Length: 89
Image 1 (cartoon, rainbow, N blue to C red):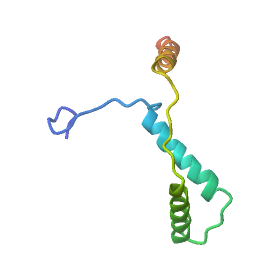
Image 2 (cartoon, one colour):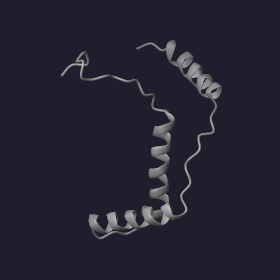
Image 3 (tube, rainbow, N blue to C red):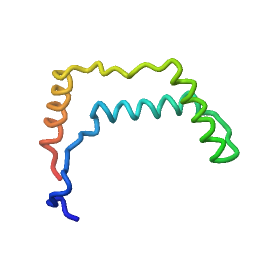
C-alpha cells in the first residue's frame, strides 16, 4: 500500500504532542510505582502487578492536565526549527 492510497491518510504527529507526552507519563508512573525495583518470577506475575496497580490508581484517578500554552509550544517549535535549519547533512 502506498501513502497515496485513498484508504489511508497520513498525519504528522510531532514527538512532543500532548497525547504522546501523557502516554509516556502514564508508563513512567507505572514504572516508578509498580515495576521499579520489583522482582518478578514470570511475565504473568508482572502483568498481575501492573493490573493491581492500575486498579488501585483508578480508584482515585484524575485526568492529566496539559499546562503548556499554545504560545510556549510554538516558541519551542521555532527554536527547534532554527537549530536544525542550519545543520549540514
